[in-house]
Image (cartoon, rainbow, N blue to C red; front, top):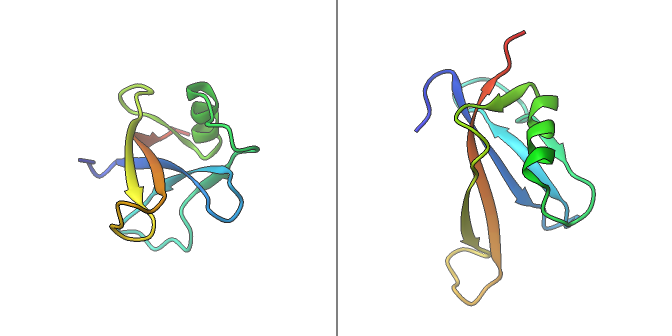
Length: 96
């Protein structure tokens, strides 16, 4: 659960490029796109790389760099289809 000043940072691999992307989910505000950082290569980024990317976007971890991993079946709920891994962590804006 997030509070008004807490957001969810998520990371998943893109289907079109095969690269990992980190993005900050922003609900309730008029934004055309969520802040996003795309990593080079298909290797899962380290926790340190994720932290640096999050800082580049103007955010930081709220409770430490422990990411929760879930899986989603693509397409839909087909258990025989490919699995998409999604990581998430609470984040907050860095004070300026």
